[in-house]
Amino acid sequence: MANATDAAEQLALTLAKGGMQRMTARVLSALLFAEQETLTAGEIAERLMISPGTVSTAIRSLTGVGLIERVPAPGSRREHYRFRDGAWATLMSSQNEVVRAMQQAADAGIAATGENSVAGRRLVEMRDFYAYLMAELPAVIERWRAERAR
Image 1 (cartoon, rainbow, N blue to C red):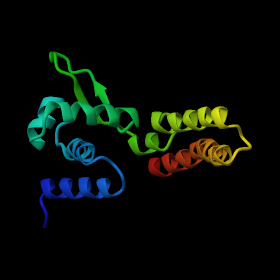
Image 2 (image 1 turned 180 degrees about the vertical axis):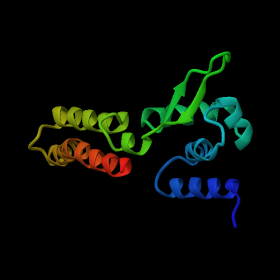
Image 3 (image 1 turned 60 degrees about the horizontal axis):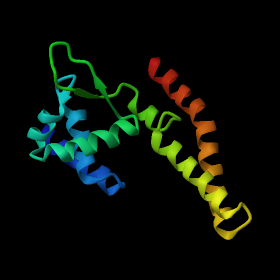
C-alpha cells in the first residue's frame, strides 16, 4: 500500500500530464493531502523542498482558478491557504478567472481580426464555446451538489 506522500506525488504527476505546471500540481497535492486545515506558503515550501518564490507563483495560479483560498489565521501574521470547499465545482464555473480571461481574449481577438476573417471565425468558435460552457455548467454543478447532499 502506498503512503500519502507517494499518492500526493502520483496525483501531482497526473495533473502535470493533464497540463498543469509541475510545481503548481505539487503545491495543489500538498494542500489536498495535508492533515491540517491550512498551510502557510513556508510550510508548503518546506514540505516540498522548493523555493518560496515557486510556491508563491503556484498559489497565485491555484487561487486564480478557484482551487485554493487564503484564509485568516487568528494570531498568525503569515497568510494561510487551504484547498477550497467545492473547489472542483468552482474550477468548472464562471468564478474561474482563467475561463473568463479566455473569453475576453477571444473577444479582443475578434475585435482585432473581424468576425469574418479566417482567424476571426476560429475566435468566434472559441468565444461561443466558452459562453456555452459557462451557460450550461451551472445546472450541471447544481445537480452534482444536490446529489452530494443526499
